[in-house]
Every structure is written in C-alpha cells, then in structure tokens.
Length: 234
Picture (cartoon, rainbow, N blue to C red):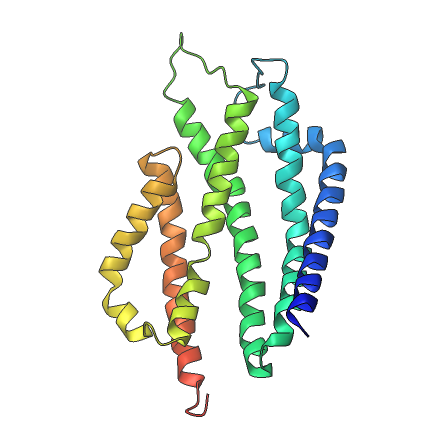
C-alpha cells in the first residue's frame, strides 16, 4: 500500500471508531440515570445533590461519554490492531496480540476492583469523620469525579504486569533483577499509590498498593516462565 492508501485506511479506522463511540454514547444517555443510580450504591448517605441547574445534566453527559468509551474500547482496539497487524511479521503478531487482550482485561479488572472493593471502604472511612452536627452534603458532580478518578487510577496501575512482561521480553530488565530489587519496587508502588489515590489517605493507599504488589509478584513469576521459554533463534 502507498502512503496515501495508508492514510485512507487510517481515516477509515478513525471514522468507524468515532461512529461506534457516538452510537454507544447516545445509547448510554438513555440509561445514564440508571447507571448513575448504580454508581451511587456504595455511598452510605441516602441521596446526592446538585447545586446548579446544569450540574445533573452535565454529570449524565459525562457518564454517557465515559461508559460509551469503555463499551467502544474493544472495537477501537480491534480496529487499531487490524490496521497495525498487516505491517508486522507473523511471530510479532503472535507476541503482541496477547498483550493487547491482557492489557484491556486488566484495565477492566482494575476498574471493577476499585468500584466493588475500594470505593465502599474509602467512602465509609471518609464520611466517618463527620460528627452529629457535621453531616455530609455531597454534590453529584463531586461524587462522580471521585469515582471516575479512582476507577481510572486503578485501571492504569493494573497495567503493571503487562509493563513488566514487555520489559522482560525486550531484555531491558530480567526477572532475577526484579526479584533483587523487590524492596525498591515496594517503595515505588507505595509512592505511586499515594500519588494516584485521589483521597490521599492511608487506607485507600494500602488498598491500592496491596493488590498491585500481588500483581507485581505474579508478573515476575510469569516473566520467569516466558523468558525461560525463549529460544536463541527468537
């Protein structure tokens, strides 16, 4: 294919991805109220409030955008993969495709783990700092921003095993070196958890750091297996 043909194919990928994302976003708009009710379930207080006429509307728009993109993400990833894969060798496609699938699965797993496990714990602890005369009055916009930031942060940090495996396969790091540097790895994970956790409290930080440490240890074990299976002609 010529350069212009590649540009035409790329334009087709972008147009199809935008169309699918737009359609799913519109569909999500009709369910945005129900989705918002689901997001509110971990909150101990009875209801949320909006402080301006546009706030509730904009939150439902943002929910439609976020959920629509998450639903469209597998299709977008597939189209990008279909665009890139013809330029790769067969052995390269066999190596890269599992990482693409694993990265997507880990992102969704991180989001679900955050929503199901961490957010209820963090909300219960943070709201406990109120008193008999100091009651929470939470706006729907601030609550959605809190949940979205927490879930996105967990989706990102759950990419650690993929990053470790890629670095090991490329020879930038070795599994044995990662084992020797486990103390430094723990410190880096704790610092990253403190930075990425929006609540900046010790409980939320540890709730993020502990599963990431488990993922770090599991990725080292997997890296040992993969690196050992590599043959000299690869």
